[in-house]
Structures are given as structure tokens and as C-alpha cells.
Amino acid sequence: MIDLRSDTVTKPTDEMRKASFEAVVGDDVYGEDPTVRRLEETAAKLLGKEEALFVTSGTQGNQIAVLTHTQPGNEILLEAESHIFYYESGAVAAFAGVQTRTIPGENGAMDPVLVENAIRGEDQHFPETGLICVENTHNRAGGAIVSPENMEAIYKVAQKHSVPVHVDGARLFNAVAASKLPITAFTNHCDTVQICLSKGLGAPVGSVIAGSKDFIKRARKWRKRLGGGLRQVGIIAAPGLVALETMRERLVEDHDKAQSLKEILTSVQGIKVINSVDTNIVVADVKKLGLTSDQFVQTLEENGILAGGFGPTLVRFTTHYDVSSQQINEVAAILKKVF
Image 1 (cartoon, one colour):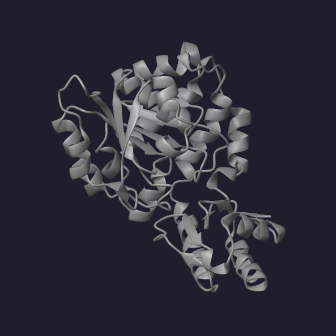
Image 2: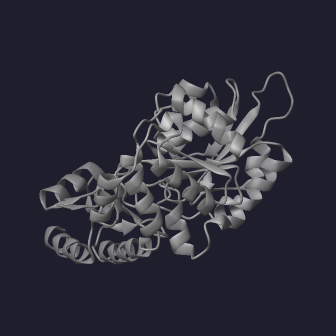
């Protein structure tokens, strides 16, 4: 099978497996796992933040950020199709007791004017605005890059109103690879950021949250409350460290494969690519084939390709380390044969 469902399906490299086997470990709740400490120190330095915290997933990282930044009864502002709003099972309401106020975006980017207009004034009828969340790259916008200029404008609005900003940067390194900018061009415009190690970077599990020393101290307690206190976790932190140190620059290869896939899909009559393909995600509309996304995905699977439904007639394809350029060429032959 050629698996284009997500970059989460990547398998750990031989170097990651070796690092896991040889990892020096200790009880992380006691702060005694040297491999985790090295991962956190490396991530914090790279992201331009004081400290970092290893967590089990991007969703857990985002939820810890919301819990740490806000109080029950607050309202958080976020883009209308952001991951925190769309794909995290209503966790901000279930755990943090906050309500969401969504702002329509353009290619995943919120208009800073709309963000400022949505910040609540002092009134007993209103919840306090406790947090603004930005997603970069933006999944449902097709891996779109939110520009540093947009992030800076939103951050200035937030600072003006004393509201913190959290970045869901699950695929932030894709934005870095595609833009050729340093990651601090993005992380300088937020208070906290979450990055995934287990997507394009290819580690088997884990994410990192970074922020101020005080924030990480409070976030660590929330991780413990959520059952995320970890023991000899260097075994899974070690491949994450390999991913962080060795897999960032090769993300451009995934982007090149996505561009090839875009051309292949566009060449099939009845298929329309609807996103700009900034990074490693291609979203196609199959409506003119007379198929639903479920029907199209099923047909692909019967012919050796895995993809994901993204709406009634939309299908998402995601390139990654474990899909070769040769396999992308095979996709072309299969589509030509089937459609």
C-alpha cells in the first residue's frame, strides 16, 4: 500500500531505533531522565524559549497549554477550522472549562483586526478572553503557512490587551523548511508553542511544548494531573531527539513530492486540487468525478493507495518520509488506469 493518509504513519528510522535501545534513562517525574532533559533543552534552544516540556502527543500539548494559560469561564480565540477546535474532541471545554470563539481565516490565517474585535471588553456579561491560538502550518487549510507577518500582527494585538498567544505548531518545521526562514521568525511571535515529533519528523511518539520557565513549571503540574507524569521515558524521547536533530531539513523532500502529486492529480479530468500546496498536504475535490470522498477513497484503497476523506467530496493526501518519489509515480499510473 502507498499510504498517503497522514505523515503520522511514518515508521522510526534505524537511527531512531538504535537511539531508543541505547538510551540512558531515569524517572522523569523526579527529573532524572537525562535523555528527556537533553531533548527538552535542545527544543527550548531551537525554539527560542526558556524551557520546554516533553509530552505524549500534540493534542496533550495543546490542552496543557490551554489549561496553563486560562481559567474556567474564559474564552479562547482561534481560527474556525483549527485543530484545537476541530479535532480535539471538545477537550478545551471538558478539561479547561473554557468556551471557544472561532474566527474565519483565509488559508488558515486570521485577520488581526477580527482578532482584536473579538477580544472581550470589561463587562460582567462577558467571559474574559484568556488565550489566542494560532495553527501553523494549518491542517485543514491544506498545510498552509501562516506568515510571520500575520503572526506578529496578531501577537501585537494580544500584547496590547494582555492576552497570551499559543501556537499549535504540530507541523511548524514544514513552514520553516518551505519558507527558508529560521524557526524563531515564527516562534518570536507567541508566548508558547507546541511542536510534534511524530509527524513529518518521523519519530514514533511525542511532542514538545516550549515557553517561559514559569509557564513550563505550571505546565508540568498540568501534565501530571492529566496522567502524563512519565518514568523511564528516555526510550521514546531518544528517537524524538534524533528526529529533532536530523529530520528537519529533509522536509523539503516531502514538499517536492507533494508538488509532484499536485501535478498528477491536476492532470486527471474531474479532479481539482483546491489548496496552494505550501508544504506536504494536497487537498483534492472529486465532485466532478461523480463520487463522494468516501467512494473515491474506497476505490483508491482497492487499487493500493490510502488517502483520507476531508469533507463530502474532498480528499487529503499527505506526503512523508515513508513515501518515495517512485511511489508517487506509481500513484500517477494507478490514477490513469482507474479514472
